[in-house]
Length: 184
Image (cartoon, rainbow, N blue to C red):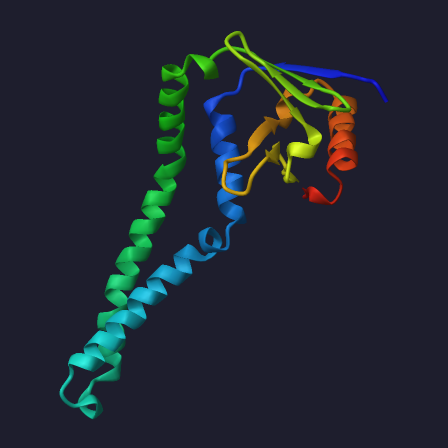
């Protein structure tokens, strides 16, 4: 198949936020951080209080649990507050990054072919062969293409596709060219 699909889009800060949130939610630690860290603090306080006590048999269990729960609850609330502000803080940081980088500004043209993906901007262009991708993930809002495990992925927002036919063509390319490297 020698078809080429061309997409023209301007990547917005919200696209970056969506991709970052998706990646964050895939991590075990990110999913369970609101349980793990407060529990670590709780049990740390229990252990410290028991260790500092002269006579463990005389410890008031209810008091020990309440005193240990207070810092854990404070940490939990602080984490929830920070998490509620993180998308807006990330969006501000991304806007600043886009504004300061001429390479990230303006329209991006992507050409999807049997060989790979070509990225064209006014200031630069690059072409990446399908074989260069080590992992491809399709989320609800974007495709994430990894070239290494340590680098952030290239993401392609699905909103850029003009039709379901275009989206299905890219899905076909991703699945056939990436094979078992594709995840959903």
